[in-house]
Every structure is written in C-alpha cells, then in structure tokens.
Length: 363
Image (tube, rainbow, N blue to C red; front, side, top):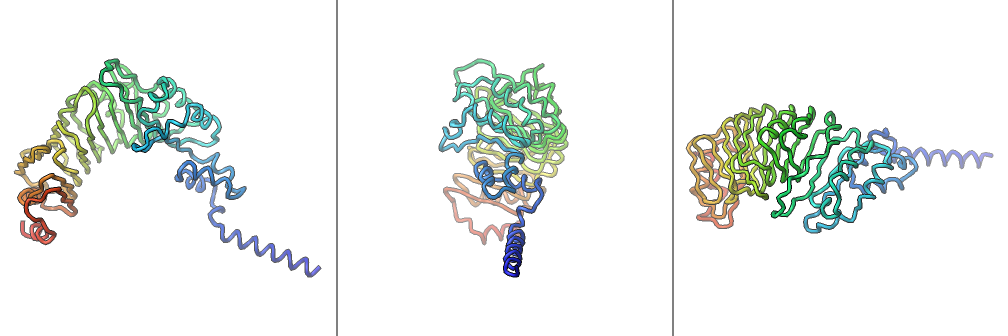
C-alpha cells in the first residue's frame, strides 16, 4: 500500500509540474483564441494537435481569411477554390475578423461578382472588422462600367475598422451615398471609379477616418480633401484610363504623414496641414509637391524651397543625382528634422555624415 501511495504521489507531482510548465494552456479561451488568430492560418490549424485543451480553440477563434498572394508567385492563392472558401465559412464556429480577396482572383477563376456578395452574407462574417477585395483590373480596351461594391457591405457598417475597395465603381446614386462606417479608421481605394460627389459622400460617411490610400486610378483627375480626423494620406503608382492629376489637401489639422510612392504626373498641393511630421519618400518619380511658395518637383530635379516648414521631423529623399546643393536647400526648408534618409545613385560631390551634422548645427 505504501508503494502504491508513493506512486500516486509521484504521478500527482508530475502532473502538477506539467501544469506549472504549460502556463499558456491555462490562459482563458479568449486569450488563446487571440493568440491563434495572430498565427498564419496553417500554423493556427496545427495547434489542435497540442492537446485536448487546444482542440476547440482553433474552431472558435476569430478567423482571418486572407488570400493575399506573393507577387513573385501570382498563382499561389488561385489554388484555393471557391468551394474551399465556402466550406470554411460554413464550418467555422467562431467569428471572422478579416476577409481578403486579392486582385485578379475573381477574374482568374472566372467568378461573378455575386460570388463575393454571397460569401459576405455568411453568418461567420457577422462582425467583420477588416475587408479587402479587388474585382481585378480589366483590360485597358474594356470600356464596360465597373461593377458596384457588394450590396452586403452595408451590413458591416457598425464593425468595419479597415476596408479596401478595388476594381469597383461608385456612381452617383449607388452604394456610395448609402454607405456609413462610424468606426472605420483605414480606407484604401485602388483602381476604382468615383464621381466627385460620390467620393465626398464616402469620406463624409467615415467620421473617424485616420488613414487614406489612393492607389492607381480613382476615376477623377482632381480630388480635394478636407478632413478633421485624417492622420495619414498616401498616393501610389498610377494605372488606368483616368489619371489623378491634382490632389489638394485643403484642411487637414491632424495630418501627420504624407506618403508619396512613385506617382508621376500628379501635383499635391498642401494648403493647411500644420501637424505634418513625416514626408516622403521623395524621388525623381515623386509627384510635384506644393507647400505655399515651396515647390518640390519630382522627375526634373527642380526644387524651389522658399519657405520654412517647421513641423516636418522625418524626411526621406531619394534622387538619381543627389548633390550637396540640393541637400542644403532641403535642410534650409526643414530645419527641425529629427530623422532624415538621404539616398542617391550618383553623388555630385561627397555628402558625409560630418557635413550633414555641420549643416544641422549652422544652418
């Protein structure tokens, strides 16, 4: 009996030791679900083999369905059929946090836009927080109107925090005027078509919007923005028949970041952005930037810096021919830089760290 009791005690001590070592499994289901959600999908699914404690976590954890693909391997996501997506949505017991359909997926599989609308009607997406879809960029010779965004987007108005619309059209009187996103903070528009009034209606429907990305064609040659909440605005390279020629930031009292990604042929005029902290990357492919009498012209190397911009603390500059005179002009215009990135393939004169420090001190 004494031997049996001793064995039981040893087993009990071993079980207690295992419990002490596996502290992660002792966390609440909600915390474990958040951990699993942050893992890649395959790794999250494999957590079911860890122990019986983990088996139900994957099925009830917030789900991220993200078919985004590697641009170097564009057919990777297309191996996921529409049937697989439908089965995941019907079988998963927990909520879905993110749903992302990349560019060309629907076109490649010859799916109608109603397929996306059907997926978005799934109860698994009831409290969706992030939505990203792109119908695909049609051939340049195709003059057919772009399809509108899915009607089912309306049902996520109270939960969406980030949305990316791609390859769809917002004409006057359709979905743009009826959309309302009271908690949306991030908005991306890629290869879409807007009228001036429909874009204004969409931005007005996002009262707490903080980040706006304009990518490719948006169907307008001129956009004027006045927003009390935007903290970041970005523009990215141009594709499409209607080229955005002018972006006017009329009034953005909270704007901190203006990001320009190789977008030639556009002029960005900043009328009022008193809190602007981050600017760039500026290069020979950057837009023409106008800050009052200060003009920074990408592509031609022309720089006319006639006023001091005190708020900018971070500046990224990339020029094919980065000369010392250009560096000096920029540092005169931005005297309060705390971080600067100077890059150039051809240096006209040597710009050393010591020279830059001297300029910071004496200019």
